[in-house]
Image (cartoon, rainbow, N blue to C red; front, side, top):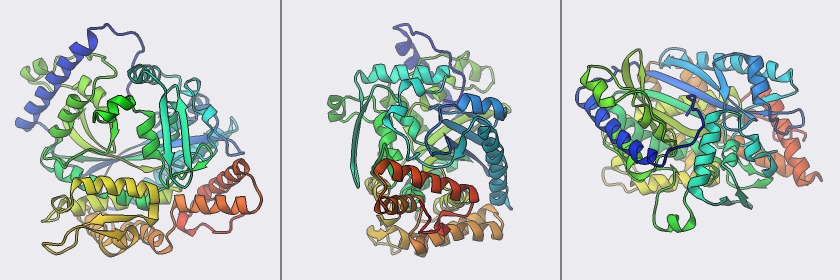
Length: 500
């Protein structure tokens, strides 16, 4: 969805013709697999980080175009809301001191962006959902001024045919109706990419699905939405509901949402692309310049433009990605589970934990997905979003006949998954110093039972206990969060009695 898309009307025949082109793309993709045309393994990873713009008062600032003009770097681009930015880190090989290198690149890039944002009285904030956002901030007038966002909003609103209903019940209940997809802009995340071969794709994707709940439990950082305390990680339910083109009647028929966890373990990347075409109507029937079958017949590599664009409008938490670089196609697993923040150290700790776990699980002789029902993995994801670091998750035992049992997430991580992630990072060739430092952050979060969500909630309740009203307490907590975020020490070290 990051590519330039020109807004405009569609002919009534476009969706039908587009479906035919999507089927051609699937046939071409199948041939690419059969002919073994994909790039060889390079242990490449990539990272994208979505950011918020806020003023000194902690409130959102709708000015990403002004800030981007000052940053003047291709590494930074717009996101859905005018208070959003995204920074992209160039691909790195998973080896050596890659984690420290990533951290330094993020510090340099975000530090520079923050200095430029200050020129227009804004600051960069890394957080899953900015706690000071109000419903009035998330309207279509505050969408970024790019054709692709305008078109996506128009098409999703038309497909929905009525207001998008937000209803999340957690510590408190939030209900809200929106006439646009703008509430999606509240969700700012980290996307982790891993290039894989077709033969390894299924194992990596299944592993990523299995640990998605653990990622959320450890990294939750979005407990507040529109002034209400809801789930520890409120991004997933908000994202699903704000992009849900189904009416209640369509939902009752069992039609799948465009944002979903999935419903089964897979055997190949093709399974996911085929499901996306089979289950989801095209939102943006925009044609590329290539006939994919003809390109293949002529010995070339098709860009599969229509399939790639359609794939970008199906919001899986672990998404398959097809791309062509230097004339060679490759596959990636894009992990979209984690919220942004709280600090760069926390972001890289989450990154280390993910890549280590995926490598470790994908290479197990008895993979976890052969012992854990998919419905349990989906239930785990929902539970982790609700309860964060206090979640209890289903996980299979080590014995051959051991059935999955409920285990506190912190115990599961400390006793089983951290050693597995450590071995996985060793397999990648990551330097021991990086491995110990960043996995140590995850370990301390578990021992202290502190992550971004728990710190935010505790600071907010202290502010309320001191006599501040709801809005003032959220603003005070956000200002304290921003100061500590810029100091850079990981969230588990943040003072519990910080003045708000």
